[in-house]
Image 1 (cartoon, rainbow, N blue to C red):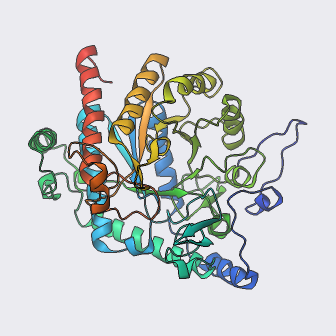
Image 2 (cartoon, helix red, strand yellow):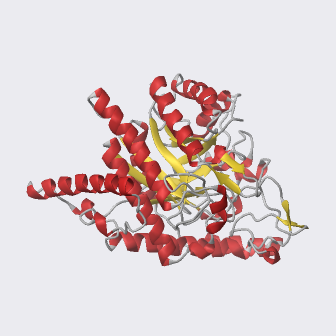
Image 3 (tube, one colour):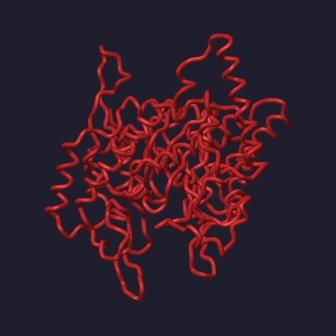
Length: 471
């Protein structure tokens, strides 16, 4: 059944989908129209699950492999997904980019790649202040399409957006499934994935080398009769930050565990809004509402770990969220900044790996959030060199500590945006205004994201060739 946690006096506190309401909470919207909120929540309770427990448990199985060093996790997508992104081209471009990156990582790391999109639900964003100044006027901050709109005349909290978020998530995931089942991910024709944007000759040559590797592998499998339908499709799971509990609670359902034998049926609480959810850096307080809510659901979970995370909190969080020490249940998403990772990550690794949770967590690097800065014109951006530096240092530190960096967590888009500085394109400050479309944090464009995948792949290939065995 649901996971429980023993308190200091030996008692196990009762958990229900609404027990979080008895705890203090951060980043919680105060809807002025309570009746409209209740109506939207009631609608969500009646609507069917967006994802199925079997899919959630399948992802759990994959993440167990990641925790044990047998696979690599690629997670990426928009900082703040907009309802407007629920259209064919936007969805396809992200699917293609994640698939291209996973192909490169498979070639480089020589391990199966687990793919999770920041898609079909990443509609809420934490904000440091409830108000902001726009054209000299104080207005409520934009908190994501699930709460309010970006235009200044749409900044009031609107409970109807909760139901709109559900329908946009459902439609997005529906098209993801349709596109994948229709062959967008068929590994027998990777060159049909739209490589027009890869204009850099060296980058394109590396990608084509990876493609040739997979084509040769598939040809060999076909020759010996070992080919199967898995060559024509992939798994792509969905995720978002579980920030808005008024949305997550009504989509939390007590459902049959599909892996339980018929003679021993079992039910668990599943959050059916996404396969994977994470707790943000601003809402991971042990005695607060978000940790209380997440300790009771069966989904795999992520926890953002940053410069303000005490090492002692890591163990307390793991003991609360994963008391049975299930491998792969928790992903620790580290995000320090390129200038802080070397001083902070080793302590966090030792706190976990020297405890009873050794080899049970997925260590994942988010090299984006700790490297955000504003340039002279006031635009928020990130430098590609800082992003890669944090990732490179994280890879090195995990190797030194004897732990396994199991994945990366990136904010990216399949569109040719100009939001992050640098990369092989050499984007400078003057280029940012060319196509800066994010309403929140800056994202890697498709070329920068693919380049980062090659840099990770090169690291593993170099390490494997140097050691004479797989990384």
